Image (cartoon, rainbow, N blue to C red; front, top):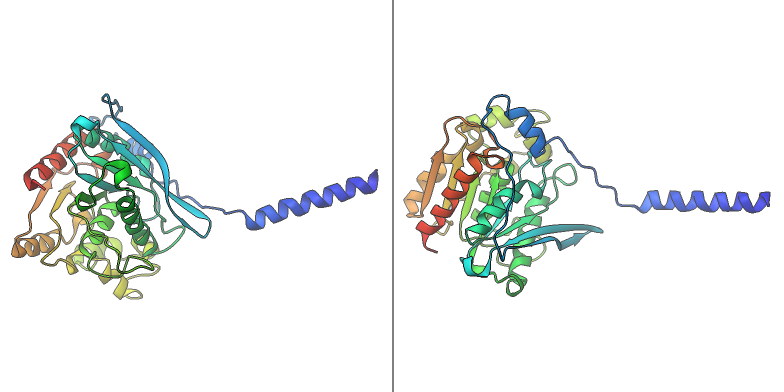
Length: 320
């Protein structure tokens, strides 16, 4: 009996050790959440209201569809579908922020719900953050989400020609960058011939040029969110910092862009250069600046509804 117990114990130890060796462990930086931001910002802005979701008849939500698997790691997306009678034919993929290191797709649930009420199909993708994989892994993931959407367009009544991209903070940066580098092979992964075009961009307080003095002052620091994403400071990874600057990639076929700023201009550094270039090419664009509100204004009322109004009006004016 004693020997049998020892054998059982050894077998159990081996099983546990083997599981620990081969189990996929994912480290998460939980420093940026909607509740954390509310607790921080409500002290300076008591008018903030945490949104409550309500749904119209016919709305649907599809949670956690797998769009990619890499090294036994699944990546998922959520899809907010409008009622059929409200469907506008326009889809938009919204990329969460969190300094390229934290955050979650659920942060955009309130906005996705409100945009779905306006007729948009809203797609919220998960992607690899810098704590798991440095630049450009997350950008490649998001382009793969775009490709997956085109491949499953019929299933969700999506027109592949009318998929826009947007995001908040670092997500806004990634959205603008991807939309303006669809003509490049950089962030497409193995198949550089695949189409990753977006027909419009919504940038909510997202950086547009890392190489401006304002961005350098705030982002080029040891262990800053940007440095951790790039794997080094600007002097060590200059080509990466330049490549990730949307202002350097505006071209005659760049998509229209809506930029909404909190009024804290560091977050949209490079905006003037982007707007000037778009105007030169005759590409529609709009810039709106709140008067010094919280950075993550899209998470809470009264700014959430105002932001959705601006996004909806922007697309109506484009008449895509």
